[in-house]
Image 1: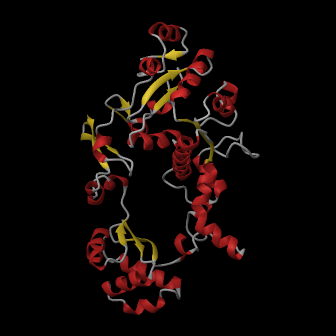
Image 2: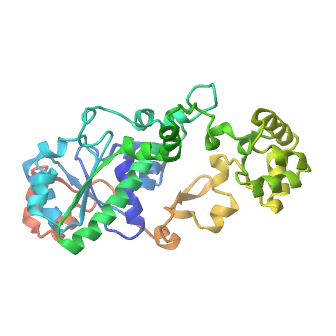
Image 3: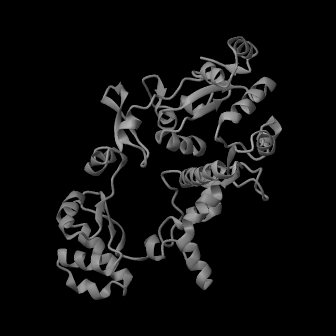
Length: 375
């Protein structure tokens, strides 16, 4: 996910992205279900608007192609384990010597240096070492596995920031930069408030006890009568007082910073008295930071996301109707909806190589040697 998500952010903003894929089936995410219109839907989400170049980097001519392409590129993004690109002959030092202005972004689990550089991992293990997994869950209970990939996604965002700032610098100085992104470190900085609290007073902060992690009764998740949930985030006194007035519990106001256990039980009993949507409707006029906890099947139809154009219809359809996808937040909704679908493996190989200056005969030879895969 990290490299494809980083680059789809840029593709949605109008960047030209060439996805380099191996010959034996390409990116394995191509085969993940569900499939719509002949495409894997997860692959669609991460690769729309890109071009595909099928390239065998274990073939000398495939390596030569990549090195040549880097001459006209602003950036190369890779997410192999440290050292793999060097062994293939397209590491940072080689490419920087040939193309000094190229920005090289390397995404890895634990960074390019240190004792874990060669260790295998995935989002869950990165979060485990970053402390984010250990912060998630109730007080006195076990850590709760998140339902998404915070290390992968935050790593992609960190990579995008490093990439864009480095491109800007390269255009000013003519000198590219090596951007070392550790997914573990990207997750670690998500602990900036909690870790600073711990470092400040030197005491452990048990899971589920800090202000924003479950320790405050006015900042948490509460069950409702219908088995669904609301999120209460009345952190500042003005919001908590509005809640108190709206539910007729002015006696709670002086207790906001007091007996959290008793107050939490009373707030929990309050929300259990009505169903989720009734509470949301009744408390909306009070503007007291209460919102429904949406399930995924509710997100796509929520009026906020519809009004903001966060979802758009693709050219494909399913049995349930038009197929929809999620745009990235900074991208123009109309432009994303008009973006090309994800490419087939090697769909643009010939086109990309022509643009790089290869003749038709040279391209035919590369395809015949299996250094290049063309659709």
